[in-house]
Image 1 (cartoon, rainbow, N blue to C red):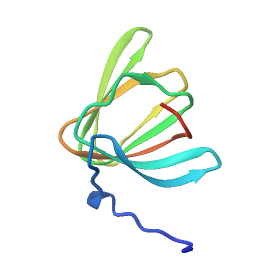
Image 2 (cartoon, rainbow, N blue to C red):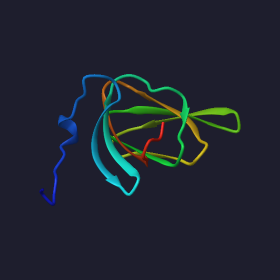
Image 3 (tube, rainbow, N blue to C red):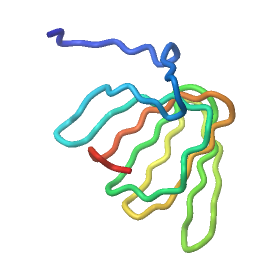
Image 4 (cartoon, rainbow, N blue to C red):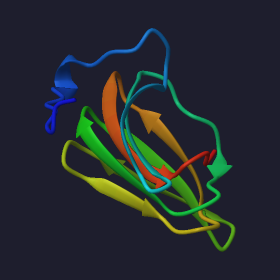
Length: 106
């Protein structure tokens, strides 16, 4: 087995929205590359999540104290969701996103 791996995120596509390429499992924390051109669903993760836009634009919607907030994320931007943060990602066209989260999280 090789000690290194190169992933060219811009070349990755999936056959469905939010299709993923598993990059690594770090003792129960997954690192996955997602491709999507469709919104996800409102959800709350079982643990914390780091959401990094690698390519494209994604409007992240999240709720704080009952108020819906929105922020546009571009390539290189990230969103951190603490436990209990309800959120949903809405890509504007195709996007590639690196997600780091607890294994088995929603």
